[in-house]
Image (cartoon, rainbow, N blue to C red; front, side, top):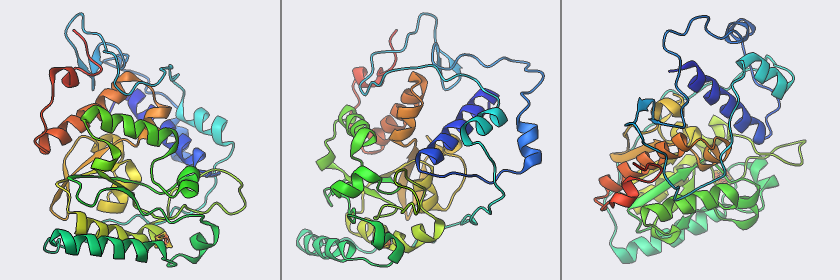
Amino acid sequence: MEYRNLLDSVIAHLEDLQARGTQHVAVDRDLLTSLSQRPSATPNPAPTPSKGTLSGVPLPTGTRLAPEPFAIPATETPLRPIASAVMARWGSVSGAPTPPARSSVAQPPLPPKLDPMAKAVAWEDLRRRILACTRCPHLVASRRSVVFGVGTPDARLMLIGEAPGADEDVQGEPFVGKAGELLTRILGAMGFQRSDVLIANILKCRPDTPGQTAGNRKPTPEEMGTCLPWLEEQINLVQPEVLVALGATAVEGLLGKTVGITRLRGTWQTYRGIPLMPTYHPAYLLRNQAPSEKRRVWEDMMAVMERLGMPISEKQRNYFLTR
Ligand code: SF4
């Protein structure tokens, strides 16, 4: 991976954690020192990623990035040494232990599909049980809503996010607010409305932030493990043809993989026999507005469309590209 891409990914991850309200991260001081020094020799300097390249591959002469179907204003992300960026943004580095990562998640086989009537009854029964869930007393104490999910249980495509944020907690619906609006635009570019798919989260209740009045935090592995059976039940009933995991936490919750989303996105995975496409969380695109990043997400979505047997027009294929 190019140094710049690695650096941008680390900074984006730290900013994501900070936005969720995390105040400290555990970083080995020797590692921090070594990361603070940019490689002294770069045999092949990294090209500027957003113009004339796609995923690092040079595009034909004259190629320009195209008008965007889910456009957001573009700004430059300056290159900063990791350590100075960390220290500038975080102020301190603690030695707090990091929760152990799950190395794998059991993938029970899907049950037989239900007939439409039985499925509708089971879906409403599942909704009733999830909305009444009190398995996490600390989250029950702070939540305003249990966010069941939105869309249709007959969806061919199911998108999985991380956990409700403040807006979702208030409205009781996943992916509202700016990231949700962007996801809706991405779905629209694919030819879907939100009601055509099913959108849900790994965690159904907003992670609490004790002592803080604002901010979000990533769910703990224990919280994800406690709530995952609800999502498994949803998937049992929906049995989508394709799953999309939006962001690293969704991948970790579903697959137990803590590999960076930058490495995993765009590569087909399997969850309980269902093809799963990992891609960036829309919130990442709001932070990193490089057209090349939007194109990467769009390529992931086109792969999903192809998997679903959906036609892709020339116009769609050229989103973010013009010749
Ligand atoms: S996070 Fe999930 S398991 Fe925990 S209380 Fe909410 S619905 Fe229940």
